[in-house]
Length: 239
Figure (spheres, rainbow, N blue to C red):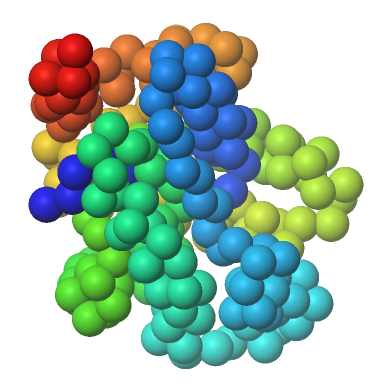
């Protein structure tokens, strides 16, 4: 068990998780928490991540025909390089490590490549063993799943990428399957995951409105309450 708290923002491309990660970090820093942030893949920080980016943008046909295991190992290898830094940060009481994408991204995307439920479950388990057991990555305390209606997500991605989406961003049906994989993972870990849809009652909410619900979900999360309670005890001991 680590002493800090590991919080992950997850969701398909175009779900708003990057914006929500930024808003959440700004809020936590404003509240006085010491943050360590990771955004996976860590482009421009690791050659493995840059290879992934090249494949997604410049070698789409090759990427789309690769065996899922080779993709999964590339994504996990990028995280492995930062595992010591992450574990070190989590050993410091009161630290909050925030990840934009983590192991569940690997599971979600590899699961989306098959329509067979049994095969998807096997892939989730294979990646879980690879990254958490073999590579020693820390398990998250809180996972916030961000989703957005498919048509809205596709429109936002086309605008964000100036009409040049990568191998994943341009395939709306694939991203729908990624989202379905996330729902399945959420069912496996209901004590850890919380769902934060970007729309409510058929209306796409503003980033600020979604952020308010992110804060509410976090404040009500048992792991966050436990973390805050321990942090308050340590402060009182110092005083």
